Image (cartoon, rainbow, N blue to C red; front, side):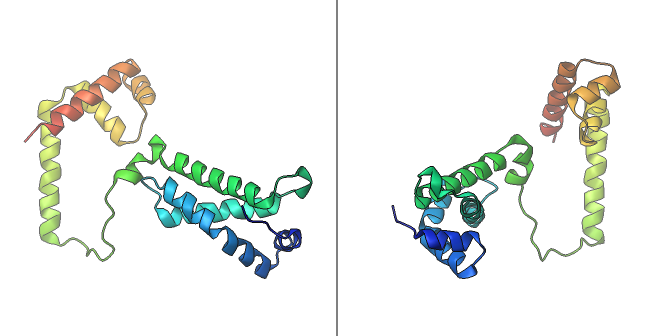
Length: 180
């Protein structure tokens, strides 16, 4: 592991831009290596490099040479922890819609009248299927889920058990997915 001049670290800690740039340049291979090892859905390589840089800045800010650890080892640990924390945060269930969705093209035009009419017909079709294939309880549970309510909130609202709500949602999804 490479050695850092204590004066360079002190200058970087004091905000000297040239010293910070020198520290970044010497630690960039470790940052890029960690980024390549930690890429997950929702965070690409460049995002992980940024997380590693944040970890490096935290290392520069919090490094205490009196504790006996060399700066390079301390910074590598801070970089790795920052990247691992970002990977863990990105893979949480609450981020699943962001990680699995398809991005919209940035140059997409506003839908014309034909597209709006077709979309309206599709919505009408889904509503018709909901009315004919779902029980009133399944319909109510699905509408609450669409409004963003949790199973517990829906259960209180509909006067049912939370597990019954979850089962009704699963049945409703299955019925609507299997419908032509």
